[in-house]
Length: 483
Image (tube, rainbow, N blue to C red; front, side):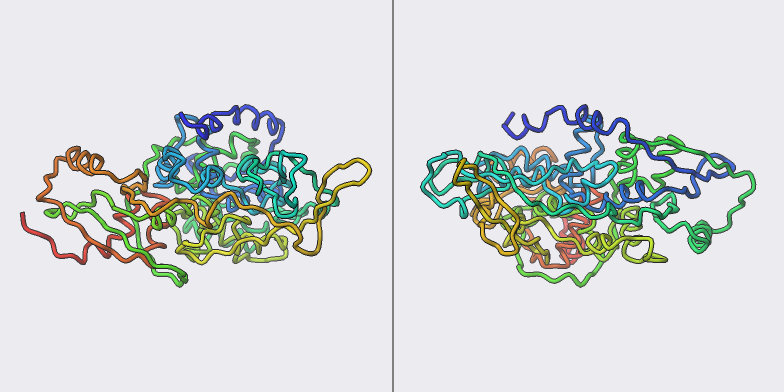
């Protein structure tokens, strides 16, 4: 087991639950006469903020916290889980830096400040810390040798940046509002539409439900805490009725989705790559893809994009209906006065500073570099940083060469986005496992642009057949070969 996997097996669930064990939320759920469905529920602003915070979670972080909370019983999150596991199992030599690999497997949210004001933060967001050279007598300038992640980059002298350096005059948090107005209450539908608690919202929910007989309905008070919020996150990714699953304890057999409607969107691109797809000639069955490092770089970037970022890229039309509804609740509210200015960052999110890859297929925007100034007290030699209006310090990025994946190198990418180094043995083993002869193998070279990139991303959210579904429109154009 490599070092990153050892770090991963920390006592996260116990520690995290211990910190939030006393945090409880109350909701009033209206349940149908048959006791089979939650029609809607009334929640306060604190719980609404926590639900909106689902949109701040990077995809890689979702896999990580679900694994840590549920262990071996964690759900398979489309092809994102297998993408995560494949990258985790790759040797560090396939990455420009060990720190870059760690960034993919434990991505930082760009909403740290907001999420640390939540009543309950399931994203394990920690305050940003800065590190400088562990050599106290280093002759190189501290201003150009600062890092944001412990032991992931080196000073110009060759030593690791391990010495934490405090930040003074950090701006104080605002009045506590995160994504909603503190005095507001909200209604939430079974599929996670969040609406202000006004008459128009009730009419909309009833209209969405169609003909509904309210006779015999039950109003139930429900108390939920950390475990239930984690369950709700889990249900929201795969169940069409996450609130009913939670409140009524309805068990669902979670199976990765197999249906997929490709969408055309207006996402712009800044790079085009190619992908060699290996098919069974007689059936057009997708076997695997032979990919350059730039394609692996592209799919690796899925892990650093937040759910809100995915919604923004795909026009609020993903394969995750509940998350679509959460996003639309922030983007197109019935009455915006019940939401804070923070909602605009939810619907137009950036990725954290230092995470943007130069070979990305998506048009992503990165947060600006922290504006910090280095200072050393003359009387005590104490080193510290303070917030500045100008960019004075240069923060080193652990990613390396502006990319994560080291190249040139070829990889085998399976349909579920599992990445392994390409070699003759893996090629032959894959064919043998499926009992396919070399004479029944066809190679198809595809051009990957913005439409294909969006289709693969969308498919990866709910299906373990991300490549074949995302590229099906190209694969099916090829004439079928006779046996």
